Image (cartoon, rainbow, N blue to C red; front, top):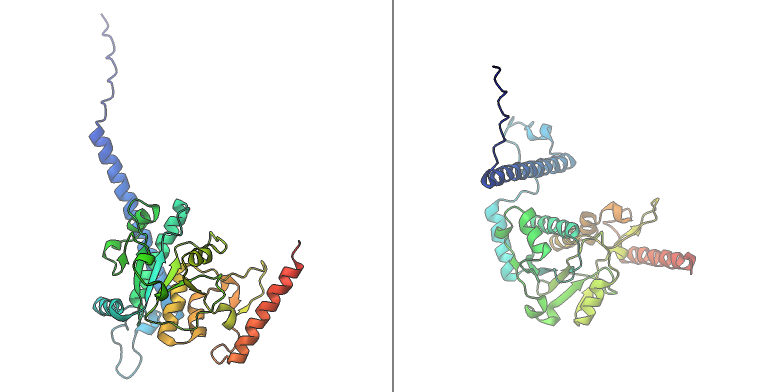
Length: 313
């Protein structure tokens, strides 16, 4: 009598614990891949900076009488102990820079991620600065998208040497000491006063909200100022006819930090204003006299007036 074929085996159910373990392993692989990509991107940026400053592989070998020696330290690198000492000195007596995170309540998750990335770059530039500012994130509230993104995207964020607070800068500093930096201000920032508190609106430059920070500062009765882009730079012709004085917060900081160190606005604007904004320094910029700067500002004003006249009603 023929034997009946064996019944197929039913698959063993996978326990919830094994599912959770698989998901965790997958997430750890994704996390490791992201960290690897960030590490590679940092290495590429360092290589580009080294090449731009003539610190390529060939420059690392000594060619003088002393013969080959150890490679020179990377430009921009500051020993951790020295960076910490400078930052603590800035906390005691340096100018303060606040990022106002209460102004960006309507940002998307993607925009919050970009702002968190800009905060990381700003902090890194401040650590490398010879004369750093003391940084503060105000209205930095647990549970908000920017709070979550800062801790998720920025390794070691909890150890950053800066202040973070859910309070407003209005509750922390005297009103007369606060200067809100906004590209829409009529006042030009002429110098950096260590006794002042400079405030940047926590917005990404891709989502431009016309006069939002200016209105906020006026409602709060604060002084305002803008970077002297029109006074020292000229509009560069480009195919899109695009000219913008709205910078990312880390770019604004690059301008402020370079000026605070060099006392040169041309050098500062070169450091922070990218060519994509449609502004360039006149040549030669470093020798520009006040009359030349006034001429550049006048030319920009005339060009703005012509564009307004040509614009359709």
